[in-house]
Length: 187
Image 1 (cartoon, one colour):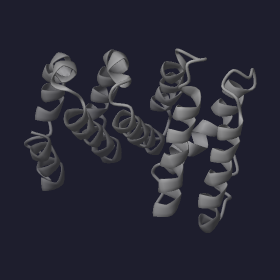
Image 2 (cartoon, helix red, strand yellow; image 1 turned 120 degrees about the vertical axis):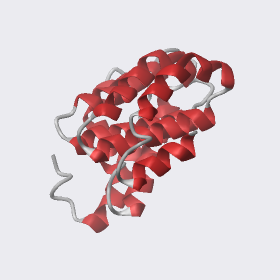
Image 3 (spheres, helix red, strand yellow; image 1 turned 90 degrees about the vertical axis):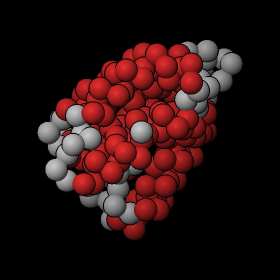
Image 4 (cartoon, helix red, strand yellow; image 1 turned 135 degrees about the vertical axis):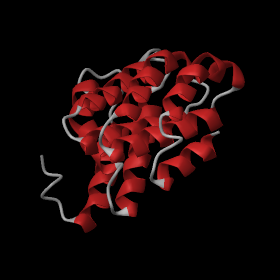
């Protein structure tokens, strides 16, 4: 609620405080998930902030939250966390959708060995966004595809490769060279 009223120069400090709050909570605490749900929306939206320092702080906070919840005491912690992040794809604004895809790409980059179990849910959701009308959302989905192709091992990628290729081929003949170049870089 306070994010739109926050001065741009204070966003980095605000996100660092949020990161420390998440890090200080115990994942086994009954208050952890409700607090995380409240704070995660602001962190995800800040992943697409125009201020690079705030963007870095948001991505660091996201990774800290994932590491905090990914403990032996909470065996499904990372899956639950990804479920919370995936909820951002149902956002009303294209900005929230693209910020969620950026956050998912960063989590995939950080946890390439842990996320392949969840790729069956993740890939179809993101590939659906390649057909979105907002170019901001499509750009984020192309970035996610690029991360998944570069990070995942060949056996995990092989299962999702046909759907990824079909999703990308729709943008290979785009009239604007920006997306066509992104698709070529992925191939």
